[in-house]
Amino acid sequence: MRPGAIALVTGANRGIGLETARQLALRGAVVLLGSRDAGRGADAARALERDGVRGVTPVAVDVTDTGSVAALAARLRREHGRLDVLVNNAGVFAGAAAADTGADLVRGLLDVNVAGAVAMIHALLPLLARSPAPRIVNVSSTTASFGLTVSGAELPGDASVRLAYTASKAALNMLTVQYGLAFREDPGLKHVKINSASPGWTATAMNGFRAPRTVQEGARSLVALATLPDDGPSGGFFDEHGALAW
Ligand code: NAP
Image (cartoon, rainbow, N blue to C red; front, side, top):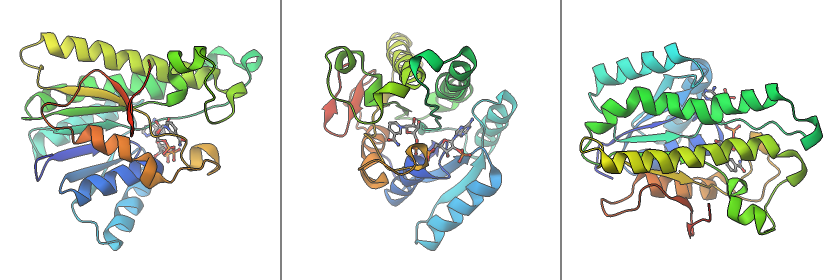
């Protein structure tokens, strides 16, 4: 990553997003810490500053609110004129058994986990295109892997309640593939790299802090994909150890 790269992380007021913001700032990025609640974002940025982390600015963005996304894009255009890194980290989980999963629960997850990522990419692609080395990271999950799921691999977490969540992250993975193919064909976008990252099962509010991995470990694959060199991959799905089966 070039020094002074402009990096935006959504849902960065806590959890894996906050740790990703910290690690990118420590690598010299100018970090925009996205939070849907301005107060929570400001608190998180202050906590990083207290820890000696410089270069982090809180920005309000609710990925389900088109007006909020457009306002952030306008601010970025005005203040920076480009964007180098977009980490689509904002996400929600809602657990329910298959038989108890209704359409409204699914709609809620798709709105944030899928449409939210599209909203961010749609609004910010013109600014990413102006970067010499743009990187987009879609934060997915190993549990969204068709390959691992149908092969019967043991995946972390409670398999009985994740029908809707895994479907939303599998849809996000297909977005990564489709954007990757589209960018490759577009002379104005072929320098944009986009990948899906799996943090692994990480202790955050999303799972009541019940998971074994720390946020430092969870952020590794996000940071690696956000800082890929020019010969790095695009259109792939990775955890910190390498490529994952779709
Ligand atoms: P988390 O602590 O619950 O953080 C989720 C973040 O997303 C919060 O900052 C939350 O904001 C934000 N968010 C939710 N809806 C939003 C919206 N509409 N607009 C903007 N921000 C929104 O959970 P996490 O574990 O760090 O999750 C980060 C990402 O990793 C998610 O995409 C998650 O699916 C993925 N992931 C997590 C694990 C794991 O084991 N933890 C595993 C695989 C993938 P509020 O604080 O305002 O709610």
